[in-house]
Image 1 (tube, rainbow, N blue to C red):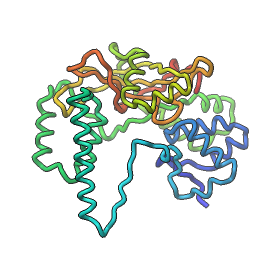
Image 2: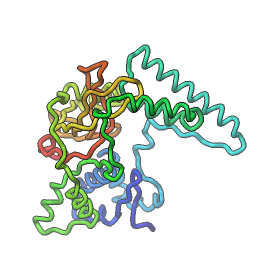
Image 3: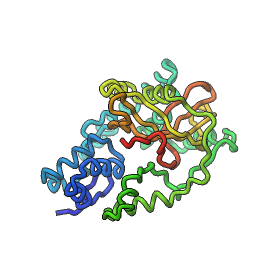
Image 4: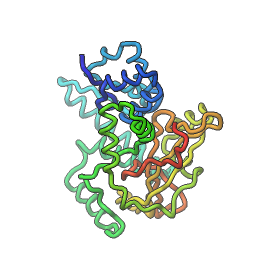
Length: 312
């Protein structure tokens, strides 16, 4: 029997969760898994219920992430060793389908500014259709962008999600026992360097942030917000380094900020569940300077206590 469970590629000690349960602190156990593994509250509750029911040991060695079963954004390709040529044909067809969809979005819909689509396209067909000449073209595009506008992200300082330490700080002040894993997370968070962050003067309103999120996720988030009668609010935004683009349309503004979903009756609901997250980058482009677009967050920022004054 393994003493740890694997959730979204993050190891979590079973004893930590059991200790919460023994102390009748199920809500805190759910929030701990949610923040530790960066998954939604609903999925975290499912895992806690498995531990309470004594069924968690059946999942030893497996990545226990219920959200994977409901994901509509991931696909699995089964590789058959005896049909390599067939696999290559299938991959080529998939590449042309993805490319056709991208060209449709770019030329017909005008939806050309979301970095996610560019990254997905390159990852999908890059393994067999990108030659050295293609790489040189990409390098030329990057070099043509004003070097003063682009700041490289240091690999030695990986970005991390913000963490709400209030529960644990309260426990520590009371002299209560705190799980070892929590103390490690607390120290790691306190060692993050936020001294170079600058609060943004140009950032999305709540409405603009929600529009950017809905435009990115479309029906997935529209349905989620409607189901919970919720709306999106944005917290403190920090200037983020501009990044090179591959479509010749340079970024003119990029900020990083936390967001939360709010319901009139229940208040702060955090990210509710996947695919919605609690931190993003918001980007504006030269060709469309009045619209904010969504991107993965590119820098670590402090937990927004003002936005989340009522814990979710």
